[in-house]
Length: 319
Ligand SMILES: [Zn+2]
Image (cartoon, rainbow, N blue to C red; front, top):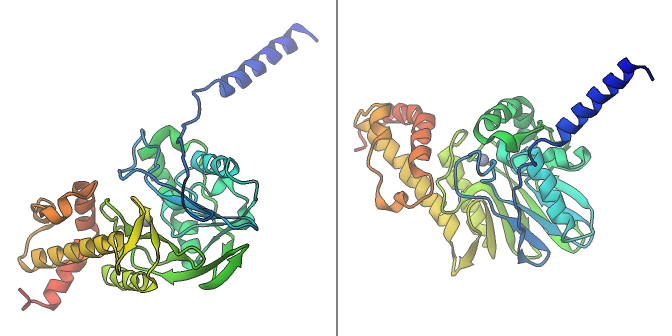
């Protein structure tokens, strides 16, 4: 080997070392919590996306059925997905048989890369949403969550899921095709354990997000969820919620917030307030305790106020 090739070899080795020696990968410190037989959740923080939380503001879950693992949402990044897989492998030897995306928001599907593409499933409109809008969402999360997003790319689910019942191992599941948080919200009910995986139709302790919301549809979907009378609800964001009497706290809280948001915007529009005035309205005590209420309310005004103004024009006599 001549001097030049040796020199080249050293350069290549240095380059390899440099890539492997970069700062350790972001550690989400995922800790699955068992909430029912074979059923585990990984709760995210009730925050906005930040560099510190690496986008882990979302709940994911998995069910060990005896005939394979069902995963519900894959998290906000490739690294999250990989660490979720490791957390599952630390609990069970069963292989993953299905990974679902509840809807097309990035914190729920950007971990897809860590799972075999042929096992990733969602409702058809959500699949189309991920295919068309996924890239833009991903760019946005790179800006908001930094290093944790390293190497994350959109993987579009390949398996459309149909609403209806399906069984895996000892668990009888039912898939519901609902909407309101987005145009297509998948909900999974496990008849075997009474656990309802509600996706972002339900928030708990955190202000609901509304970039693609239709509040009337969302409220109708909440009625459907209440009617199931699930034993435990796993919301898309926030602590799990249990059935007490006939009430599920997180569902009532989400419903109350949406009612408040809808009526606040309509009344503001009837008074002729402009968008900036609405954004600075004082927040009443019943919503002030929700995490990230101020920025989330301002964003919701941006998303929903133009339609509220249209409504006010159509119904000028309601005061
Ligand atoms: Zn969402």
